[in-house]
Length: 383
Image 1 (cartoon, rainbow, N blue to C red):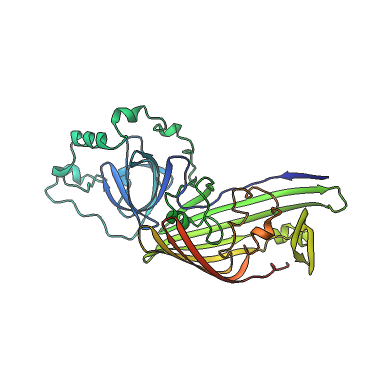
Image 2 (cartoon, one colour):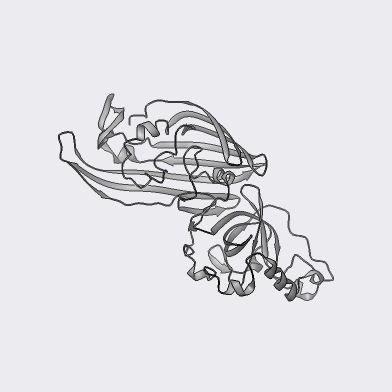
């Protein structure tokens, strides 16, 4: 018999670049144009997206309440939106530091004094401003956006929308809209991609032109096994992943590091796990036990070059990393990410998830991706 008591102290602050629940979506990028009722931004995968604002839209600058008048072309933003028909409607707009891109076109001198009021610069001269009737007609012509239908539409009350309560650190889920965006997300080790049905939460912030993300798992486990093959042990399994992304030239650069304190929190280079086998400790094969992860599980640089709307050329370089073999490693698999110990199939499914000198090249087109990796495979370090 095996009795296992596990105290789980799980910090699941996991990572990604565009995740959500249901129809709620997040967009990250730089504002390139604005009107009275829309914001156009260039996303991290170099796509131009227009999001429409509403009376209920909330604005936050550096964690404090703000207004659309505080938002300028060039700002880095995170927009929490809902898809209504064919349009994206903004629920929350968060922004802070201005990126270095050309300023908006100046307002002509003949503009009225209204346009010269501080914080009231408009991107369109008064004669071209849409009238109330025009805006109403435009709203009614948007699929699924009749004004009367919006008033009673479920989920349009910001306070009632699930997942909308976020703290100043912007802990959120995001939802890629296509496979190219999913690859650019890079929320798992190596070059793997997880399905939208299993989004990973994350802690995210922006510093200048950098988007920073962090997620982790920490488990405290007390295993007591009464059989002759079993053993007792109190230990911790854990991992921490930090990631930074920014636009570089025509593509997106991603730097990522994944660390584990298991060399210190798992003593004697193993923890008991009945029926598990593989790897070595002190030069002896491990049976009925699991080797701890290395301190450096991954240290990688990635560059994704967008060749077209549906195509992406990706490069992955890692002195310690995860080559393009097998499924997503178990710390990131939805079926095993919350397990406090490694699954019994770990050494078959994830045999190379920590390897040396990894180089991977991948080509994505539509829903298809082909990859090739070169690496040195060996047993993890014994320390």
